[in-house]
Image (cartoon, one colour):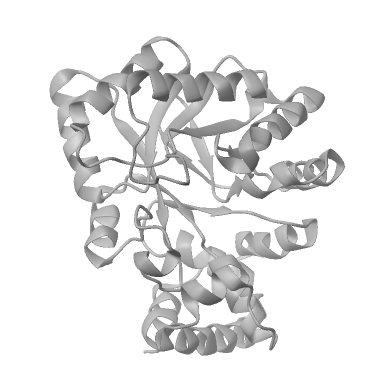
Amino acid sequence: MKSIELAHNIKLSEISLGAGGLGWADDEHCFSIMDLYVELGGTTFDSARIYANGNCDVSLGKWLKSRNIRDKVTIVTKGSHPNPSSMFVSRLSRDEIEGDLDLSLKAMGTEYSDLHILHRDDVKKPVEEIMDSLDALVRAGKTKAVGVSNWAASRIIQANKYAESAGKTPIVCSQAHFGLALTTTPTTGDLTHVILNEPDVSWYKESQIALMAFSPQANGWFVARAEGREPKGGPRAKYDFLPENHRRLERLIKLSHETGCSLSSITTAYVRDSGLNASPLCGYSSTEQLKDSFGALKFKLTKEQVKFLETGE
C-alpha cells in the first residue's frame, strides 16, 4: 500500500481507517475490522474524544495493547470539539487543547500521538494563539505533528504563515468533507462542518498539503440507491436533494459495469486519484465493507475516468 509522507517519518496510509463507529461495538467486532485493515496493509487509525463519548479511544487502546503494535501504526487523535449542544462555543484554549489530548493518550494507553488534530475552528480566535498551543504539544512530546479538521483553507494558510515566521510547528494535515457526492454545509445540519468547494480543491491540488477526506463513500448513499434501497436518514438528507448526485450515481454505475470494479472501490479511488494529496478516511461496520472498499488498491482511475464521473464528458 502506498502512503503519504507528513513529517518526522509519519505516514498516512493510502486508505485511512476512521474508527469513530467502532466505539459503539463490542471488542470482538471492532478488533476483527482493525485486524483485517492491518492485514491488508493499512496503518493509519483516526479517533477523536467526541466519538462514542470517548469509547473509541478506549477500544483502539485495547486493540493496540493486545496486538503489541503501537510502533507499527500511525495514530491520529482529535480533540477540542465543541459541546454538541453549543457548537459555536469553541473549546480552543490551551488547557482545553492539551486536556483533550491527555485524555486520549490515557484512554489509549500510549505516551504520544503521531498526529493530533483540532476537530473544529473558531475564526474569532487568532490563529497565533491556536498555533502556539499546538506547538507546545509537540515540544512536550505529546504529539509528533499537528493538523486541523473542518478548517477553511484560508485559515490554514494564515496559520502556517505564522508558524513559518515564528518558528512554530506547522499544520501538516487537514481533514475535510470531500468525495464524489456533493452536498452543502447547511444540509449537513452543522454550520461548522467544512465541505471543500472549488477554490478549496484548487488550493489543495496546488499546495499538496495532506488531506484526510471524510465521507468519501457518501455514508453508503451511492450503494443504497444503486441497490434500490432507501438511504438512511443522514445520507438521504445530505445527498438526495441534489439532481447532480443522481447523475453522478448513473455514471458511477456505468463505470462500475465497464471496469468490473465495485461502487465503493471506485468512490474510494476517486478521492485518491482526483489530484489532491488525499487519503480517503473510511469507516466500516463490517469486514465485508472493508474488503469491498479496498478493491481500490487494485486499480487507478485515469484522468478521463475522473472527469467522466464529475461531468459525464
